[in-house]
Amino acid sequence: MEKLYESKIIEIGTMAEELLKEDMMVIFNDTAPPELRDICFVHEKTELADAIKAGDWLTIGEEQYKIHFVGDTANDTIRDLGHATLKFNGASSSDLPGHICVDVKPAPAIKPGTNIVFSRSI
Image (tube, rainbow, N blue to C red; front, side, top):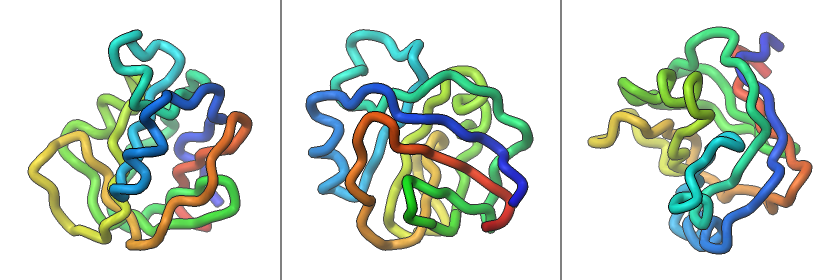
């Protein structure tokens, strides 16, 4: 498995799990501004080794999701801010350039210490 980005959840915003119920997960590294922290799963700051693209994989804890779409700005915001909006909708496009769309299946239970990995293969 070629890891492109690997980090660990360190904080869960008070409204972040509500967004999961709508098949959406907002991630941000520990530089997340205070006004956005409530909706984010905050993770440790790390480096993006290579661009994430459709066909790559996202692993959250033990659950794996194939990536179907990566918005035009998603790699820039992941690299600079550790930020993306993950959509569990299986879509091959999105109107928002920061979205990363993955398989249609529920997100696992997420708690501080849960790993998030983007990889070239599983």
